[in-house]
Length: 237
Image (cartoon, rainbow, N blue to C red; front, top):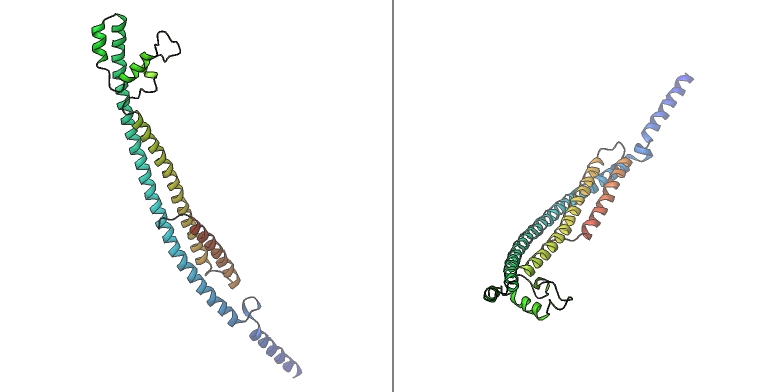
């Protein structure tokens, strides 16, 4: 009889211990449930904010990418313009070389009518350079330029325009590289925000509440870092 009473007492104590034992790491069940609710609310907020910021990053990357394409297109157009102007300058220089060669030959042969005929057909940009060169008496002064083409005043049409277009091309190309870097930065942000979404979603799958909070904390850290980068980067809008 005494053994039966003692067994009943032990069974009652064991039942009471099970009923009073805290769940999930020695915490009351109600407290764990409240923490789970708070975590779910935080997770929803993180997912919502991250979705908005991801869309913003994608939009900025697209806008900067469009500006980059425009800059590279303008650089290409300026290169084409520089080539066209350079070809025009080369053609003018070739004409001046031919007429000058005929004029030198006529002078050497003392054919004054031919020399005068050819000299009257010097191009407007070449005749002043010839006059300046002859004024230096190149046959007597060895320090004089070897030909009128070496005179500072000689500049075929298209030379300055080609140089200006080439400079514009360099500027547009450099700007395109800067814009490309900005677009890449926002693409990197979309990757960070994707990681935030991944860890925030994963935080709902942990075995324990503590593990879920740890995973959600990683998502929060990534969200803060990505948001700081987003605020620091230049924006189109």
